[in-house]
Length: 321
Image (tube, rainbow, N blue to C red; front, side, top):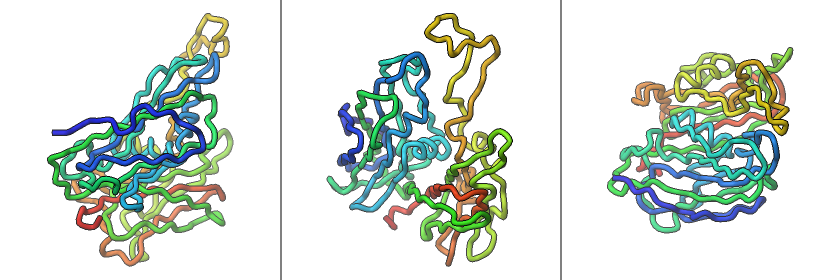
């Protein structure tokens, strides 16, 4: 049995604030964080990047310690790549004052509704969600929020998913190491790099990736950006195109879309992300154990000196919370 209920009921949002809300006390499978807003630009599609940029940081904290912490774009990536969750959004028709919405997933288990992988019960006030809104919203106004939870009252979880993000800026091109957490098993690592190849420019912030455990290559001895990126859809969810599809239109207000050619796909919103999966079959056979590690790093070969984000997805035993 599960209980789907409202935690935050349709509250108005103010940019550049960081409100917190108490979460339910029963075991939690996941949260559904929905932003509703009006498009504030006429005769064109609102950039999807503006929607995910509304959330600078979303944190779930247990007694002040982070259980989940990412920005809006990386939250979308974790939901899609780790949990196969793709939000469809509402009313993306592209005109001024269109009322729109989009739902983000905050998962506490890789398989939603799992009674063995979810966040364990807590006491009132111990588990909170805090949302840091961007300093301003671009081409968006009239924002409101509602948060809904899926509880599993009869669950006896053995483990839960912990997701935290860190930002690193390389100081030189070539190899540099980012420490991964030791103690819990790691199911996946999600990466984001600033630069990807463009017209006549092959530069990529994350050129190659290697995993090193106890000062030796481990599982991933070396893999390229292109291979990791192109594998993401095959391993997890189909890479839908969340940008404009262009067709011939007759209305003068839509003249910028006039085209007699076929559909023109755009880069996926996760064009700069990579997935480094370990527990690829979700059966624990290949999950990255860290309890026997003295050191554990993901080694990135940097093509430029722009920021990188590293998001390990840990599978934490409830007894170790």
